[in-house]
Length: 476
Ligand SMILES: NC(=O)c1ccc[n+]([C@@H]2O[C@H](COP(=O)([O-])OP(=O)(O)OC[C@H]3O[C@@H](n4cnc5c(N)ncnc54)[C@H](OP(=O)(O)O)[C@@H]3O)[C@@H](O)[C@H]2O)c1
Image 1 (cartoon, rainbow, N blue to C red):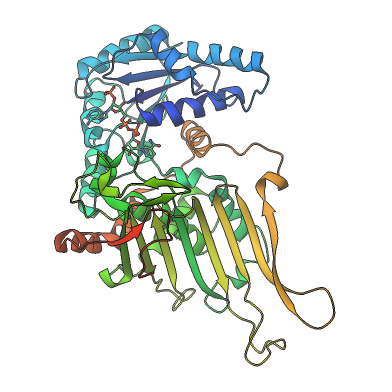
Image 2 (image 1 turned 90 degrees about the vertical axis):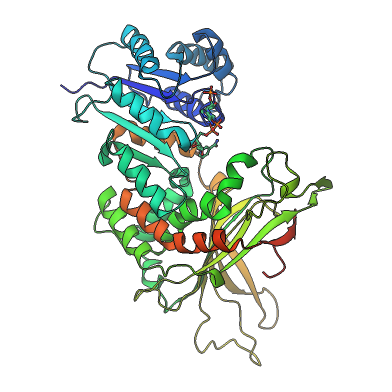
Protein backbone atom coordinates (compact mmCIF):
# COMPACT_ATOMS: atom_id res chain seq x y z
CA UNK A 1 0.00 0.00 0.00
CA UNK A 2 1.28 3.47 -0.86
CA UNK A 3 2.66 5.39 2.11
CA UNK A 4 0.90 8.61 3.05
CA UNK A 5 3.76 9.91 5.21
CA UNK A 6 5.21 13.16 3.89
CA UNK A 7 8.36 15.09 4.65
CA UNK A 8 8.43 18.68 3.47
CA UNK A 9 11.96 19.93 3.05
CA UNK A 10 12.14 23.72 2.89
CA UNK A 11 15.44 24.81 1.43
CA UNK A 12 16.02 28.46 2.36
CA UNK A 13 13.95 28.03 5.54
CA UNK A 14 15.53 31.11 7.14
CA UNK A 15 14.08 33.42 4.46
CA UNK A 16 11.11 35.68 4.03
CA UNK A 17 9.01 33.37 1.86
CA UNK A 18 9.38 30.48 4.30
CA UNK A 19 8.61 32.59 7.36
CA UNK A 20 5.72 34.63 5.91
CA UNK A 21 4.07 32.15 3.58
CA UNK A 22 5.21 28.52 3.68
CA UNK A 23 5.20 27.75 7.43
CA UNK A 24 1.96 29.72 7.99
CA UNK A 25 0.30 27.85 5.09
CA UNK A 26 1.45 24.47 6.43
CA UNK A 27 0.17 25.41 9.87
CA UNK A 28 -3.22 26.44 8.42
CA UNK A 29 -3.46 23.08 6.65
CA UNK A 30 -2.52 21.34 9.90
CA UNK A 31 -5.26 23.21 11.81
CA UNK A 32 -7.82 22.08 9.23
CA UNK A 33 -6.65 18.47 9.46
CA UNK A 34 -5.55 18.49 5.83
CA UNK A 35 -1.97 17.28 6.29
CA UNK A 36 -1.33 13.53 6.44
CA UNK A 37 -0.99 12.19 9.99
CA UNK A 38 2.68 11.35 9.43
CA UNK A 39 4.16 14.62 8.29
CA UNK A 40 7.38 16.37 9.23
CA UNK A 41 8.88 19.63 8.04
CA UNK A 42 12.65 19.95 7.69
CA UNK A 43 14.08 23.44 7.27
CA UNK A 44 17.50 23.83 5.69
CA UNK A 45 19.60 26.99 5.17
CA UNK A 46 23.06 28.38 5.92
CA UNK A 47 21.98 30.41 8.99
CA UNK A 48 22.69 28.65 12.24
CA UNK A 49 19.74 27.80 14.50
CA UNK A 50 19.07 24.96 16.89
CA UNK A 51 15.75 23.13 16.36
CA UNK A 52 14.32 25.04 19.32
CA UNK A 53 15.56 28.47 18.20
CA UNK A 54 14.08 27.83 14.80
CA UNK A 55 10.75 26.76 16.31
CA UNK A 56 10.58 30.02 18.24
CA UNK A 57 11.36 31.98 15.08
CA UNK A 58 8.60 30.44 12.95
CA UNK A 59 6.03 30.47 15.78
CA UNK A 60 5.64 34.23 15.59
CA UNK A 61 3.94 34.03 12.17
CA UNK A 62 1.64 31.03 12.65
CA UNK A 63 -1.92 32.35 12.24
CA UNK A 64 -4.90 31.49 14.48
CA UNK A 65 -7.77 32.23 12.07
CA UNK A 66 -8.74 28.57 11.69
CA UNK A 67 -8.64 28.08 15.47
CA UNK A 68 -9.71 31.42 17.01
CA UNK A 69 -9.81 29.92 20.50
CA UNK A 70 -6.49 31.04 22.02
CA UNK A 71 -5.80 27.81 23.92
CA UNK A 72 -6.67 25.58 20.98
CA UNK A 73 -4.45 27.66 18.71
CA UNK A 74 -1.54 27.58 21.18
CA UNK A 75 -1.92 23.77 21.49
CA UNK A 76 -1.94 23.44 17.71
CA UNK A 77 1.12 25.65 17.40
CA UNK A 78 2.95 23.51 19.96
CA UNK A 79 2.02 20.27 18.16
CA UNK A 80 2.91 21.76 14.77
CA UNK A 81 6.33 23.14 15.67
CA UNK A 82 7.23 19.83 17.31
CA UNK A 83 7.08 18.43 13.72
CA UNK A 84 9.41 21.18 12.46
CA UNK A 85 13.15 20.50 12.44
CA UNK A 86 16.10 22.53 11.24
CA UNK A 87 19.53 21.72 9.80
CA UNK A 88 22.11 24.27 8.66
CA UNK A 89 24.56 23.62 5.86
CA UNK A 90 25.84 24.71 2.47
CA UNK A 91 23.55 24.72 -0.53
CA UNK A 92 26.15 23.19 -2.84
CA UNK A 93 27.31 20.41 -0.50
CA UNK A 94 25.89 16.91 -0.75
CA UNK A 95 27.51 16.29 2.69
CA UNK A 96 25.28 19.00 4.15
CA UNK A 97 22.26 17.30 2.61
CA UNK A 98 23.47 13.96 4.00
CA UNK A 99 23.45 15.62 7.46
CA UNK A 100 19.86 16.62 6.73
CA UNK A 101 19.15 13.06 5.57
CA UNK A 102 20.44 11.72 8.88
CA UNK A 103 18.08 13.99 10.85
CA UNK A 104 15.24 12.93 8.56
CA UNK A 105 15.97 9.23 9.05
CA UNK A 106 16.07 9.72 12.83
CA UNK A 107 12.64 11.39 12.67
CA UNK A 108 10.63 9.85 9.86
CA UNK A 109 8.21 7.05 10.71
CA UNK A 110 9.49 4.65 8.02
CA UNK A 111 11.70 4.48 4.95
CA UNK A 112 8.77 4.87 2.55
CA UNK A 113 8.23 8.55 3.06
CA UNK A 114 7.08 10.86 0.27
CA UNK A 115 9.09 14.05 -0.09
CA UNK A 116 8.37 17.62 -1.17
CA UNK A 117 11.48 19.73 -1.75
CA UNK A 118 10.45 23.37 -1.61
CA UNK A 119 13.14 25.67 -3.05
CA UNK A 120 12.55 28.92 -1.13
CA UNK A 121 15.86 30.30 -2.33
CA UNK A 122 17.08 32.70 -5.01
CA UNK A 123 17.00 31.05 -8.46
CA UNK A 124 20.77 31.59 -8.85
CA UNK A 125 21.31 28.61 -6.51
CA UNK A 126 18.48 26.32 -7.71
CA UNK A 127 20.87 24.08 -9.62
CA UNK A 128 23.50 23.89 -6.84
CA UNK A 129 20.77 22.63 -4.54
CA UNK A 130 19.20 20.28 -7.08
CA UNK A 131 22.61 18.74 -7.86
CA UNK A 132 23.49 18.36 -4.16
CA UNK A 133 20.13 16.73 -3.45
CA UNK A 134 20.54 14.45 -6.45
CA UNK A 135 24.11 13.49 -5.39
CA UNK A 136 22.94 12.79 -1.85
CA UNK A 137 20.52 10.22 -3.29
CA UNK A 138 17.43 11.93 -1.96
CA UNK A 139 15.18 11.82 -4.97
CA UNK A 140 13.04 8.73 -5.55
CA UNK A 141 13.72 7.92 -9.20
CA UNK A 142 10.44 6.38 -10.24
CA UNK A 143 8.69 9.30 -8.57
CA UNK A 144 5.70 7.13 -7.68
CA UNK A 145 5.99 5.17 -4.44
CA UNK A 146 7.33 6.88 -2.46
CA UNK A 147 7.20 10.00 -4.58
CA UNK A 148 9.54 13.03 -4.61
CA UNK A 149 8.39 16.43 -5.88
CA UNK A 150 10.11 19.78 -6.17
CA UNK A 151 8.48 23.20 -5.88
CA UNK A 152 10.14 26.20 -7.48
CA UNK A 153 8.91 29.77 -7.66
CA UNK A 154 9.35 32.42 -10.30
CA UNK A 155 11.45 33.92 -11.71
CA UNK A 156 12.03 30.94 -14.03
CA UNK A 157 14.92 32.51 -15.96
CA UNK A 158 15.19 35.97 -17.52
CA UNK A 159 14.18 35.04 -21.05
CA UNK A 160 13.29 32.01 -23.15
CA UNK A 161 16.88 30.80 -23.39
CA UNK A 162 17.75 30.98 -19.68
CA UNK A 163 14.38 29.50 -18.78
CA UNK A 164 15.01 26.57 -21.17
CA UNK A 165 18.43 26.02 -19.59
CA UNK A 166 16.92 25.89 -16.09
CA UNK A 167 14.18 23.51 -17.26
CA UNK A 168 16.68 21.22 -18.99
CA UNK A 169 19.13 21.12 -16.08
CA UNK A 170 16.48 20.65 -13.41
CA UNK A 171 14.99 17.80 -15.45
CA UNK A 172 18.23 15.84 -14.91
CA UNK A 173 17.25 15.56 -11.23
CA UNK A 174 13.45 15.95 -11.20
CA UNK A 175 11.30 14.77 -14.13
CA UNK A 176 8.69 17.21 -15.49
CA UNK A 177 5.86 15.45 -13.63
CA UNK A 178 7.82 15.83 -10.37
CA UNK A 179 8.33 19.57 -10.95
CA UNK A 180 5.73 21.97 -9.58
CA UNK A 181 6.33 25.51 -10.89
CA UNK A 182 4.48 27.70 -8.46
CA UNK A 183 2.80 30.88 -9.66
CA UNK A 184 1.03 31.83 -6.45
CA UNK A 185 -1.48 33.96 -8.39
CA UNK A 186 -3.01 30.75 -9.70
CA UNK A 187 -3.82 29.72 -6.13
CA UNK A 188 -5.80 32.87 -5.40
CA UNK A 189 -9.46 32.17 -4.82
CA UNK A 190 -10.76 34.50 -7.55
CA UNK A 191 -8.39 33.05 -10.10
CA UNK A 192 -9.55 29.54 -9.24
CA UNK A 193 -13.11 30.81 -9.62
CA UNK A 194 -12.46 32.16 -13.12
CA UNK A 195 -12.92 28.77 -14.75
CA UNK A 196 -16.07 28.12 -12.72
CA UNK A 197 -17.47 31.55 -13.56
CA UNK A 198 -16.84 31.03 -17.25
CA UNK A 199 -17.68 27.36 -17.68
CA UNK A 200 -20.23 26.49 -14.96
CA UNK A 201 -22.61 29.35 -15.82
CA UNK A 202 -24.65 29.61 -18.96
CA UNK A 203 -24.76 33.38 -19.23
CA UNK A 204 -21.12 34.31 -19.89
CA UNK A 205 -19.71 31.87 -22.43
CA UNK A 206 -22.10 32.76 -25.31
CA UNK A 207 -20.99 36.42 -24.95
CA UNK A 208 -17.28 35.65 -24.46
CA UNK A 209 -15.98 36.67 -27.88
CA UNK A 210 -15.29 39.58 -30.24
CA UNK A 211 -18.98 40.01 -31.14
CA UNK A 212 -19.88 41.10 -27.62
CA UNK A 213 -16.67 42.09 -25.84
CA UNK A 214 -15.04 45.40 -26.70
CA UNK A 215 -11.87 45.19 -24.58
CA UNK A 216 -10.23 43.29 -21.74
CA UNK A 217 -7.77 44.75 -19.27
CA UNK A 218 -5.80 43.17 -16.48
CA UNK A 219 -4.51 45.67 -13.93
CA UNK A 220 -2.01 45.06 -11.13
CA UNK A 221 -1.20 48.08 -8.99
CA UNK A 222 0.88 48.38 -5.85
CA UNK A 223 0.90 51.52 -3.75
CA UNK A 224 4.28 50.55 -2.29
CA UNK A 225 7.74 50.66 -3.78
CA UNK A 226 10.62 48.19 -3.55
CA UNK A 227 11.16 49.01 0.14
CA UNK A 228 14.73 47.79 0.45
CA UNK A 229 14.18 44.70 -1.75
CA UNK A 230 15.41 46.34 -4.93
CA UNK A 231 18.36 43.97 -5.28
CA UNK A 232 16.15 41.31 -6.85
CA UNK A 233 13.69 43.63 -8.57
CA UNK A 234 16.29 45.81 -10.27
CA UNK A 235 17.71 42.79 -12.14
CA UNK A 236 14.27 41.81 -13.44
CA UNK A 237 11.96 44.81 -13.77
CA UNK A 238 8.20 44.84 -13.78
CA UNK A 239 7.66 42.83 -17.00
CA UNK A 240 9.77 39.89 -15.84
CA UNK A 241 8.53 40.22 -12.24
CA UNK A 242 4.77 40.10 -12.77
CA UNK A 243 3.66 40.55 -16.41
CA UNK A 244 5.33 37.57 -18.11
CA UNK A 245 4.20 35.19 -15.39
CA UNK A 246 1.28 36.12 -13.06
CA UNK A 247 -0.59 38.44 -15.39
CA UNK A 248 -0.19 36.52 -18.63
CA UNK A 249 -1.46 33.46 -16.71
CA UNK A 250 -4.50 35.46 -15.58
CA UNK A 251 -5.11 36.71 -19.11
CA UNK A 252 -4.85 33.22 -20.56
CA UNK A 253 -7.50 31.94 -18.11
CA UNK A 254 -9.77 34.81 -19.16
CA UNK A 255 -9.32 34.26 -22.88
CA UNK A 256 -8.71 30.53 -23.39
CA UNK A 257 -11.25 28.29 -25.09
CA UNK A 258 -13.21 25.83 -22.93
CA UNK A 259 -11.14 22.79 -21.95
CA UNK A 260 -12.61 19.41 -22.94
CA UNK A 261 -12.80 18.42 -19.28
CA UNK A 262 -11.68 19.59 -15.87
CA UNK A 263 -8.19 18.15 -15.86
CA UNK A 264 -4.77 19.72 -15.54
CA UNK A 265 -3.66 18.51 -18.98
CA UNK A 266 -6.81 19.77 -20.71
CA UNK A 267 -6.57 23.19 -19.05
CA UNK A 268 -2.85 23.51 -19.76
CA UNK A 269 -3.43 22.55 -23.41
CA UNK A 270 -5.98 25.37 -23.89
CA UNK A 271 -3.82 27.90 -22.05
CA UNK A 272 -0.82 27.09 -24.22
CA UNK A 273 -2.96 27.34 -27.36
CA UNK A 274 -4.16 30.76 -26.26
CA UNK A 275 -0.67 32.00 -25.40
CA UNK A 276 0.60 30.75 -28.75
CA UNK A 277 -2.01 32.92 -30.49
CA UNK A 278 -0.91 36.13 -28.73
CA UNK A 279 1.14 38.25 -31.14
CA UNK A 280 4.77 38.73 -30.06
CA UNK A 281 4.91 42.06 -28.21
CA UNK A 282 6.73 44.95 -29.96
CA UNK A 283 8.40 47.99 -28.35
CA UNK A 284 5.60 50.24 -29.65
CA UNK A 285 3.08 48.13 -27.73
CA UNK A 286 4.60 49.07 -24.38
CA UNK A 287 4.71 52.17 -22.18
CA UNK A 288 7.44 51.89 -19.56
CA UNK A 289 7.67 54.03 -16.43
CA UNK A 290 9.75 54.42 -13.29
CA UNK A 291 8.50 56.11 -10.12
CA UNK A 292 10.07 59.32 -8.91
CA UNK A 293 9.55 61.27 -5.65
CA UNK A 294 5.92 61.48 -4.63
CA UNK A 295 3.48 60.84 -1.83
CA UNK A 296 1.82 57.88 -0.14
CA UNK A 297 -1.13 59.53 1.57
CA UNK A 298 0.45 62.50 3.33
CA UNK A 299 3.88 60.86 3.61
CA UNK A 300 6.71 61.87 1.24
CA UNK A 301 8.22 58.89 -0.59
CA UNK A 302 11.54 58.88 -2.44
CA UNK A 303 12.14 57.86 -6.03
CA UNK A 304 12.89 54.23 -7.02
CA UNK A 305 16.55 55.12 -7.50
CA UNK A 306 16.79 56.63 -4.00
CA UNK A 307 16.29 53.15 -2.48
CA UNK A 308 19.61 51.94 -1.00
CA UNK A 309 19.27 48.62 -2.82
CA UNK A 310 18.88 50.22 -6.29
CA UNK A 311 21.72 51.71 -8.39
CA UNK A 312 21.43 55.52 -8.74
CA UNK A 313 21.38 55.30 -12.54
CA UNK A 314 18.96 52.38 -12.83
CA UNK A 315 16.62 52.44 -15.83
CA UNK A 316 14.67 49.38 -14.66
CA UNK A 317 10.95 49.92 -15.28
CA UNK A 318 8.64 49.84 -12.27
CA UNK A 319 5.58 50.35 -14.52
CA UNK A 320 4.50 48.81 -17.82
CA UNK A 321 1.35 49.03 -19.87
CA UNK A 322 1.35 46.39 -22.58
CA UNK A 323 -1.09 46.15 -25.51
CA UNK A 324 -1.72 42.57 -26.60
CA UNK A 325 -3.60 41.14 -29.54
CA UNK A 326 -4.87 37.62 -29.82
CA UNK A 327 -4.89 36.21 -33.32
CA UNK A 328 -7.71 33.71 -33.24
CA UNK A 329 -11.34 33.61 -34.36
CA UNK A 330 -12.72 34.32 -30.93
CA UNK A 331 -10.68 37.47 -30.22
CA UNK A 332 -9.38 38.96 -33.52
CA UNK A 333 -9.46 42.76 -33.23
CA UNK A 334 -10.29 42.91 -29.49
CA UNK A 335 -7.70 44.98 -27.60
CA UNK A 336 -6.29 43.27 -24.52
CA UNK A 337 -4.00 45.13 -22.14
CA UNK A 338 -1.96 44.43 -19.05
CA UNK A 339 -1.01 47.31 -16.75
CA UNK A 340 1.36 46.68 -13.87
CA UNK A 341 3.12 49.12 -11.61
CA UNK A 342 4.67 49.78 -8.26
CA UNK A 343 4.40 53.11 -6.44
CA UNK A 344 0.94 53.83 -7.84
CA UNK A 345 -2.22 55.30 -6.32
CA UNK A 346 -3.83 52.01 -5.25
CA UNK A 347 -3.19 48.44 -4.22
CA UNK A 348 -5.43 46.37 -6.47
CA UNK A 349 -5.43 43.53 -8.98
CA UNK A 350 -8.48 43.30 -11.23
CA UNK A 351 -9.74 42.15 -14.58
CA UNK A 352 -12.13 44.45 -16.42
CA UNK A 353 -14.17 43.05 -19.29
CA UNK A 354 -15.95 45.76 -21.21
CA UNK A 355 -18.90 44.72 -23.34
CA UNK A 356 -19.94 46.41 -26.58
CA UNK A 357 -22.77 48.92 -26.74
CA UNK A 358 -26.23 47.63 -27.63
CA UNK A 359 -26.73 47.90 -31.39
CA UNK A 360 -29.72 50.13 -32.19
CA UNK A 361 -30.18 51.07 -28.54
CA UNK A 362 -33.67 52.61 -28.37
CA UNK A 363 -32.61 54.72 -25.39
CA UNK A 364 -29.88 56.68 -27.20
CA UNK A 365 -30.74 60.36 -27.23
CA UNK A 366 -29.03 62.76 -29.63
CA UNK A 367 -26.16 60.30 -29.97
CA UNK A 368 -25.77 59.84 -26.20
CA UNK A 369 -26.34 56.21 -25.21
CA UNK A 370 -26.53 54.43 -21.86
CA UNK A 371 -23.17 53.02 -20.72
CA UNK A 372 -22.09 49.60 -21.91
CA UNK A 373 -21.98 46.64 -19.50
CA UNK A 374 -18.81 45.78 -17.62
CA UNK A 375 -17.77 42.71 -15.69
CA UNK A 376 -15.06 43.35 -13.12
CA UNK A 377 -13.28 40.61 -11.23
CA UNK A 378 -11.30 42.01 -8.31
CA UNK A 379 -8.65 39.52 -7.32
CA UNK A 380 -7.27 41.53 -4.39
CA UNK A 381 -7.87 43.14 -1.98
CA UNK A 382 -11.48 42.53 -0.90
CA UNK A 383 -12.25 39.83 -3.47
CA UNK A 384 -15.34 40.66 -5.53
CA UNK A 385 -17.11 40.18 -8.84
CA UNK A 386 -19.38 42.90 -10.09
CA UNK A 387 -21.44 43.35 -13.21
CA UNK A 388 -22.32 46.87 -14.20
CA UNK A 389 -25.55 47.41 -16.07
CA UNK A 390 -27.90 50.22 -16.97
CA UNK A 391 -31.11 50.90 -15.04
CA UNK A 392 -33.84 53.45 -15.21
CA UNK A 393 -33.21 56.02 -12.50
CA UNK A 394 -36.27 55.87 -10.21
CA UNK A 395 -38.58 58.83 -10.66
CA UNK A 396 -40.24 60.78 -13.43
CA UNK A 397 -38.81 60.78 -16.91
CA UNK A 398 -36.54 58.30 -18.59
CA UNK A 399 -33.08 58.79 -17.10
CA UNK A 400 -30.41 56.14 -16.76
CA UNK A 401 -27.91 55.09 -14.11
CA UNK A 402 -25.27 52.35 -14.20
CA UNK A 403 -25.35 50.20 -11.06
CA UNK A 404 -23.39 47.13 -10.02
CA UNK A 405 -24.67 43.68 -9.30
CA UNK A 406 -22.11 43.23 -6.57
CA UNK A 407 -20.73 39.97 -5.24
CA UNK A 408 -18.30 40.78 -2.46
CA UNK A 409 -16.81 37.59 -1.12
CA UNK A 410 -16.78 38.75 2.46
CA UNK A 411 -20.55 39.35 2.35
CA UNK A 412 -21.49 36.46 0.10
CA UNK A 413 -19.48 33.66 1.73
CA UNK A 414 -19.04 32.63 5.36
CA UNK A 415 -15.96 30.56 4.62
CA UNK A 416 -12.44 31.78 5.34
CA UNK A 417 -10.67 32.55 2.06
CA UNK A 418 -7.50 30.45 2.15
CA UNK A 419 -4.17 31.98 1.32
CA UNK A 420 -2.98 30.95 -2.17
CA UNK A 421 -0.05 29.06 -0.62
CA UNK A 422 -2.42 26.83 1.37
CA UNK A 423 -4.24 25.67 -1.75
CA UNK A 424 -1.10 25.22 -3.76
CA UNK A 425 0.93 23.35 -1.13
CA UNK A 426 -2.01 21.00 -0.59
CA UNK A 427 -2.16 20.41 -4.35
CA UNK A 428 1.55 19.53 -4.37
CA UNK A 429 1.00 16.95 -1.61
CA UNK A 430 -2.03 15.55 -3.45
CA UNK A 431 -0.20 15.59 -6.80
CA UNK A 432 -2.75 17.86 -8.51
CA UNK A 433 -0.92 19.89 -11.15
CA UNK A 434 -3.89 21.94 -12.43
CA UNK A 435 -2.68 25.20 -10.88
CA UNK A 436 1.01 24.83 -11.73
CA UNK A 437 2.84 26.13 -14.76
CA UNK A 438 3.83 23.49 -17.29
CA UNK A 439 7.01 23.58 -19.34
CA UNK A 440 4.97 24.38 -22.46
CA UNK A 441 3.15 27.29 -20.77
CA UNK A 442 6.46 28.68 -19.59
CA UNK A 443 7.94 28.49 -23.09
CA UNK A 444 4.89 30.11 -24.68
CA UNK A 445 4.82 32.94 -22.10
CA UNK A 446 8.51 33.70 -22.64
CA UNK A 447 8.07 33.70 -26.43
CA UNK A 448 5.55 36.55 -26.14
CA UNK A 449 8.02 38.79 -24.32
CA UNK A 450 11.60 37.64 -24.96
CA UNK A 451 12.26 39.65 -28.18
CA UNK A 452 10.92 42.90 -26.70
CA UNK A 453 12.77 42.40 -23.40
CA UNK A 454 16.02 41.96 -25.35
CA UNK A 455 15.28 45.09 -27.37
CA UNK A 456 14.52 47.13 -24.23
CA UNK A 457 17.79 45.90 -22.65
CA UNK A 458 19.92 46.42 -25.77
CA UNK A 459 18.53 49.87 -26.60
CA UNK A 460 18.65 50.87 -22.91
CA UNK A 461 15.17 52.35 -23.23
CA UNK A 462 14.65 54.95 -20.52
CA UNK A 463 11.27 54.59 -18.77
CA UNK A 464 8.96 57.61 -18.45
CA UNK A 465 8.92 59.26 -15.03
CA UNK A 466 5.81 59.24 -12.84
CA UNK A 467 5.24 60.53 -9.33
CA UNK A 468 4.94 57.93 -6.57
CA UNK A 469 1.25 57.71 -5.69
CA UNK A 470 0.03 58.73 -9.16
CA UNK A 471 -1.76 56.63 -11.80
CA UNK A 472 1.42 56.12 -13.85
CA UNK A 473 3.32 57.97 -16.58
CA UNK A 474 1.68 60.92 -18.39
CA UNK A 475 1.76 59.09 -21.73
CA UNK A 476 -1.01 56.89 -20.38
N1 LIG B 1 8.99 36.51 -0.56
C1 LIG B 1 7.95 36.28 -1.33
O1 LIG B 1 6.81 36.60 -0.96
C2 LIG B 1 8.11 35.63 -2.69
C3 LIG B 1 7.03 35.64 -3.59
C4 LIG B 1 7.15 35.01 -4.82
C5 LIG B 1 8.33 34.36 -5.14
N2 LIG B 1 9.38 34.36 -4.28
C6 LIG B 1 10.59 33.62 -4.66
O2 LIG B 1 10.87 32.66 -3.65
C7 LIG B 1 12.26 32.54 -3.45
C8 LIG B 1 12.63 32.83 -2.01
O3 LIG B 1 12.15 34.11 -1.64
P1 LIG B 1 12.59 34.85 -0.29
O4 LIG B 1 11.90 36.15 -0.32
O5 LIG B 1 12.42 33.96 0.88
O6 LIG B 1 14.14 35.07 -0.55
P2 LIG B 1 15.28 35.47 0.47
O7 LIG B 1 14.73 35.76 1.83
O8 LIG B 1 16.11 36.49 -0.20
O9 LIG B 1 16.17 34.13 0.49
C9 LIG B 1 15.81 32.93 1.15
C10 LIG B 1 17.03 32.36 1.86
O10 LIG B 1 18.00 32.01 0.87
C11 LIG B 1 19.30 32.30 1.37
N3 LIG B 1 19.94 33.23 0.43
C12 LIG B 1 19.57 34.47 0.11
N4 LIG B 1 20.39 34.99 -0.82
C13 LIG B 1 21.31 34.06 -1.08
C14 LIG B 1 22.43 33.99 -1.96
N5 LIG B 1 22.74 35.01 -2.76
N6 LIG B 1 23.15 32.87 -1.99
C15 LIG B 1 22.82 31.84 -1.20
N7 LIG B 1 21.77 31.85 -0.35
C16 LIG B 1 21.03 32.93 -0.30
C17 LIG B 1 19.14 32.93 2.75
O11 LIG B 1 19.32 31.93 3.74
P3 LIG B 1 20.69 31.60 4.47
O12 LIG B 1 21.58 32.80 4.37
O13 LIG B 1 20.30 31.26 5.87
O14 LIG B 1 21.22 30.45 3.72
C18 LIG B 1 17.71 33.37 2.78
O15 LIG B 1 17.17 33.33 4.07
C19 LIG B 1 12.90 33.48 -4.46
O16 LIG B 1 13.16 32.74 -5.61
C20 LIG B 1 11.81 34.50 -4.75
O17 LIG B 1 11.95 35.07 -6.01
C21 LIG B 1 9.29 34.99 -3.07
